[in-house]
Structures are given as structure tokens and as C-alpha cells.
Length: 241
Image 1: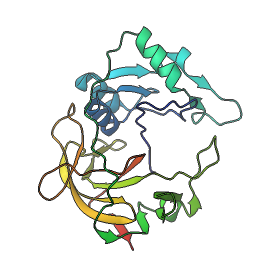
Image 2: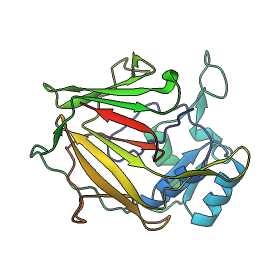
Image 3: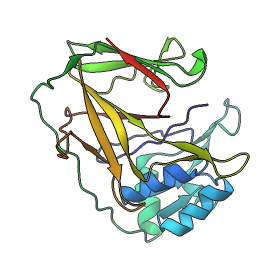
Image 4: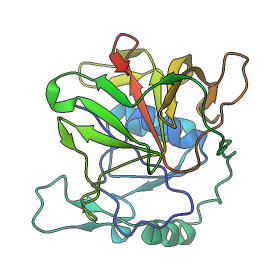
């Protein structure tokens, strides 16, 4: 089953969710952005990593008044929050300001192979991800399980300006807890402007930000707009044309 972690910067979101539990790889990613990490409890290893990495922890179990349960949705998928509540609550909790290095952006078109369609075969057809490039809007429309992936509130199809694929090793901490080796380095792809180029990624430690690099080791420039990062196993089938 695929999972999501969202990073919010300047834009406001009146409804974020469903908010789920902490996982070790999410904690590592959040720590790298110096982010305030909002979650609802977590796996044993996930909560251990919250303490080990020292991430600013905004657990719903402790700060319940800044989250809400929405009626008509089955638990545990009914827990939500907002950027306003998170910012207000974290400030009152005395959590520190966020400092991180922004990615580099350019409106110059990417040079690379044609990539109007992307397919990522995570596991079964129910979790297959596809992207279709919309040249008029310069965005990639996302499909999940054969259907348009819609924002639940606005009923609009998700369409990021950049799609980054990261290949990372996986293992098991125990019988129930997945480990994604997101601290380290590996290969991947950048898709933008209907083109594709190979990249390398690196994350030196939990508190370092994940970087996307070209063959010369320089940080790649992204298309201004939303970024979706798809983390897959080394053997996962990723195709484009």
C-alpha cells in the first residue's frame, strides 16, 4: 500500500489529511527540511526516530485541539488539520522557526528524452501510478489505480509541475515495519516540461535535506510549481514515452 507525506511552505491549506501515523522514513525526510512534523501516533520505530532525530514533534495525541475528526468518514481515515492550525499550535507550543534551503528553479525548458506519459508500477494495478503531460498547462496530470487522482475537496485532478522518481533500497525493521533507505544516495529521474533526464539523489544524514543532482554533481533546476516525489524500490518498473 502506498503512503503519502506532504510538505507545506508558503501556501495555505484549509484541510490537510487524512493525518496518519509516523513512519521512520517520513521522520527522516521531515527532519531534513527542519520541518514541524504533524502526525497521529506512529509505529514503534517511527516514534523512536522522532526522539532520535530531534524533529519538531506535533503529534495529535499531544496536541489534539489542533486536529479534528470529520463525520461521515471511517476512522482512522477521518483525522484532519490545516496549515493555520499547525502554525498557530506549533507557535504556542514553542517549536522553533523552520530553516531550510529551497530548491533551485528555472523557467528554461528541460533538455532530455520525450516523456509525455509516465508509468510507475508500485505493486498491483490498484496502486499503479500514471502521469500524462498537459502541454498547455505545463503540468503532469496524475492517475492512481487507473483513475484520475483528484483533490478530495476541490475535485480537481492533481497535476504537479515536476515529477521526481527516487530509487531507494528497502528492508524490514521487523515483521511489520518497513524501512526505506532514504538516508544515503541513489539514482532516479526528473520529469518536467514533457521531458526526462536521469538524476542522482543524496541525503547525507537525517538532518540534511534530500538533494537532486545531475551527472556533474550540480543541483538540478526544477520547474516553478508543485513537486511530486515518487520513492520506489530499485527494481520497480518505471517507464515513459
